[in-house]
Length: 208
Image (spheres, rainbow, N blue to C red):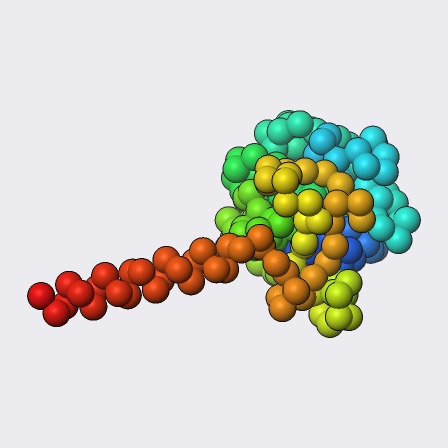
């Protein structure tokens, strides 16, 4: 049930790796703390690259967080007095995360999420497509392409042998790339061949 006189919201900060998503999440959460609002922060337990119980940005900013394994755990652990909920690396959560954040927003809570909008193949990452659709505010930020220095919106995985969508890593595995230098291992060529064959088949059918 929503708190009387309050309006919840869903904010998503997204983009590729090394774009400053977590830094922006921490900035918003710390401002809420300065305003003396009750804040709770969650992170997926799978992401322990820097710290088990802190959200840490690439620029070494940090804030205490509670690691959880499922999205339902977040709903179970949010206090009635909480006014702001932050969730980092939200792309790693299960599909129920959309229902969880909507329920929190209906309770009058400001929910701030950060995560990768695309995986290493340039496809929507996990539940991110649904979260972007239901968000009240979306801020898509960019990194810097490691090849040409242009604005980067893609996350490039250095080793194509690792094909799983979820593979936690840092600069050892990933680089930020612009669209021109985001090589998705021949996927564009495969798609082009499909459309060429499709159009040729349609032309033959129309000529019959």
